Length: 348
Image 1: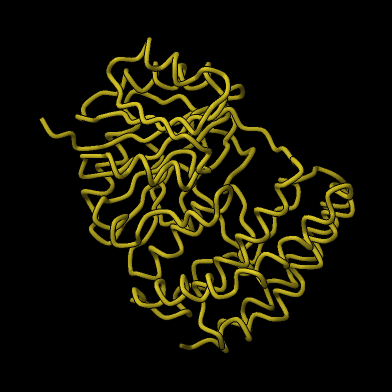
Image 2: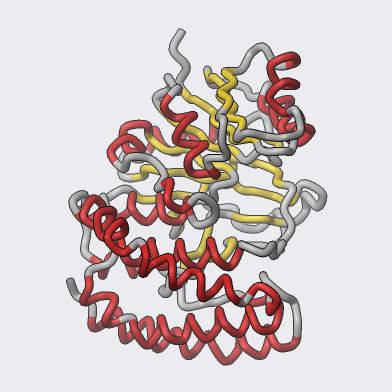
């Protein structure tokens, strides 16, 4: 029997996490589904363990690390379901999580992607993400991070899904040509959501779909590099040139904030911010090719795209310090004004 949904999990050197995730997925009820695990050339024998212990999955072993985006696309190419469901390896799921996601897609044809209420695995009384909030400059934050699990009770449209747990219509995924594999790591979920919205498909948050995520904020040496270069890639692909021009004041401010974060918290890896600039220059024509592809599927104006962005930068998601709190109070009204002005200018 053809499954309604294909659950795709990319694994990389977290064998016990994947096994725990699969154990919880096996308790999913009310939906026919298949499970596809893509092992991204793990060095901890993940693939061997899965092949031995998990006979009810489709295991695909990549000879190289394709990154999250490439691994997901590889899994999607082997999927048979009407819906594609992407799940992080370090999550566990509530038995009714998948049915709730698919019901939300079935009930509204304008919605192309749906995301779960994602709670902290080790603090289930706290939220990890209820979708993502996308700042007008492309900076992205977990929506609801740290809030009580009893909040965010309404199904509603969001700026972006969270890559930790979401579903997308298969035909939409194919139309968009899946994740942009150039991203490799970070921002791939935001990029996909933004391209989907540009093509006319909204993203929605589904509170009845509950997933638990082993989340903690970490800064590793290449994180700034991937996040920043992928933010530039996303903006250059998605927005009209006149829109980017209108956003220059806000984008300059975002650069100052990003540099401030690097100087305060990641000084030893400051060169990675410059590497992000270098990557854009070196890959300009590759980005322009991707831009033409994205723009060819445009169904809405940039004004509509920017309406689904935020002016708030919740800096305490990165560091809960006095500096972050003061910065928050100063930056919120500043970006509120810049966003209002930009929306007044960008009528196309």
